[in-house]
Image 1: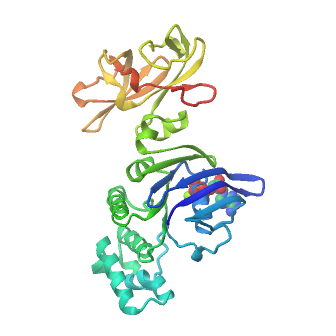
Image 2: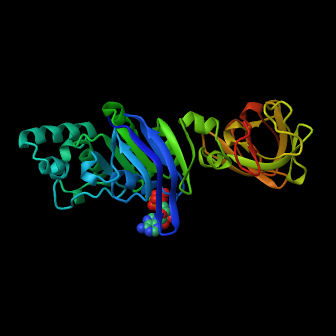
Image 3: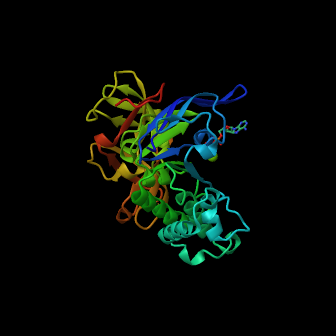
Length: 355
Ligand code: ADP
Ligand code: MG
């Protein structure tokens, strides 16, 4: 079974704590994406699972086996790196077949496995080339193929798309998802890109400073972010935030901006300081969605399908993703609104969600 479990996992370099009491259970066959800003401990966590980094304390299991003290090759995992790490002097066939050769898989059987995987990844016509004769996307497919031929219990990916251009990144991303649908092997995938996390994951783990902020399905972390950090990290353009204080059912924000929250469920007690989160795509042109406000259009960015309007409200600037048919005019005053259920409320002190 390819279930993975991290129990009270810690990693320190000297007195510097990098991963802090990480607890996470990954089910067999699940696709879990570990996402967070650069330096938050994603690669370190993955490398502890792979056996490439020692564990300071805690336990890592694959299936029923505690793997803390096993060598990487004893762990039945395969890892795909950002820089592919292919053997430059070997052909694609030799790169794909290397692990099979080491394991003494008979030649005919190895050839069959290599060709099957190559066909799955659409690189069957490249088997006699060397890595230097391939494009970045093709190299990335070879790196994945090399992991797949081994039929491991768990695949580990560390930012595998970072070196590809935007278009290719989208293509290979789709292929990775298809691959998981076909093989149903457990995947732990590390990225700093929230779009990759949202599109690929069964569950997303958001890591910040070596601590898990939230674990949930893409739907859960998008619709019910547990904290200001998660709200701001998941979703693009990023969630807007306003600070305010609750007074008579209203949020009084900086500079006399007031949002009427009387229709919003779970508004905290009088006097509490809150942070209000508004997603750009939830802000609508015109009044009437429930919580109405007015703002001054500062910058307009047409994207074709949508138009981004950066609007000033008091001291704050919010981004609204509007229907291009609304043609917001720079410098004009516009009416905007948001449905009460689309507002996110956070405690200003703890930055945790209030509902
Ligand atoms: P991420 O993959 O999330 O970008 P990493 O897991 O690579 O982050 O690194 C987490 C933190 O650990 C970083 O601040 C990094 O500088 C630090 N770090 C990584 N390796 C070492 C090391 N060998 N010695 C000291 N600090 C390290
Ligand atoms: Mg990393």
